[in-house]
Length: 288
Length: 262
Image 1 (cartoon, rainbow over the protein chains, first blue to last red):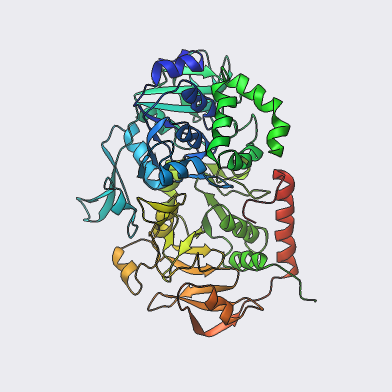
Image 2: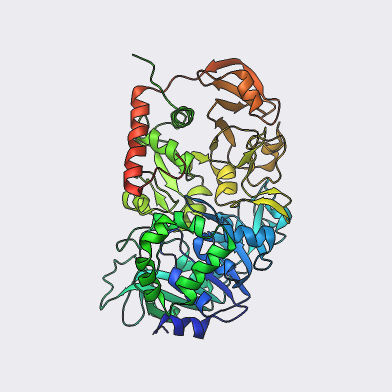
């Protein structure tokens, strides 16, 4: 049953050292505020899962929160590399990062399998690709009806799913729309779920087939306006493309990354203060 | 009509856009493929259906998206579905005519590497990874690839096959039993290459105006062959160039910069 709580309380209660955590959101509704809070609380040894690691996992990996990353595309969308991810893989900084690499179709299917309480997913994929040579979890299974050989991969079953959505009501029923990615599947595949939202409303006013997660499949709901920044929340604010480009230079070397993390995350008490600092230094960051 | 001045990137994008036929259902990669697919939609292929892996089906973005999940893709789509649904029902379900991909590296059989340069466990350069490409390259009925030509990109041997093209040539792809027929063209800033019907090795079939065979050989990591009836690519028309430039201009104004990959 969903409890309205602060984000710091939600993270403290539900995310522990060593957990398997999926912060999902496909370009849209990425739960950045929750990622920051994980860094702020110094949580370690996380096994992170996410289709597109994006800047949010670049921050978590660079800050030393992650032991393992399961992913399918690790870039800064529209910009280039994730420098902290690359530094962890290429130079083991701040420490070694175990990779479990899959394709988008595979991870999407694996979330579906997890949500459906199945041990593995089946799909037509990976034929001719070298990925199965380096990820031994990618195996094959023969169809008992046609004999066709298909890819079989383990279901994704995180300890905790974290997503951002547009609205929730008093009971913690959550509504999201636009590009909805794998968030519903991620929540249903996980033991626990934290949802941050733009707005708390009396009535969701959702159409019958809208993407609604009932409050009873969610553990914590937190009001965090702009909590998806620098990604976007459809109907609320646009993607901050300038920030995504700035991240390229901020994250390129270790010192400027650490200085950024210290100033904007470790020395701030919450997301609202992070936002105030961003606004206060907007001009300087732009010219950095 | 005077010959319009154009850049090599414009030539590449225009010639790639021409290969997307009107009405085709196209699964679009971000960057160069998205630019070419949208140029096609704005010129000769207004009925092309653009699908992005983030979930929009029938997207008609007024400006080029910077990311694969920009809001304007959702706003202009016929419908937006979840990521599992895009891959399960629409791609694996056999609804996609054309997969339009870019590549960090490709070989003579149009296999693609977007994973790693060097050893997988001790990489020289860690690339973003597979994304949707392995299943797009296997399930789309055909695949178009767009990439700037250089010895770094067009290599003798891939360090890693992320997405299969024609594997080792001949009938090797057919033996994998994949639903789609694989890459049918690679469009570059110098030329268009197509697989030989028998060997499946990429052959230059069209050379862009003003480009020499020596330049193509010099920018390819293997001794590339030229087809016997190798043609010169048609020049970009005024309409194609103007539409592309307007699209870039609108994109620059909307995003404050020129698109990530022009």
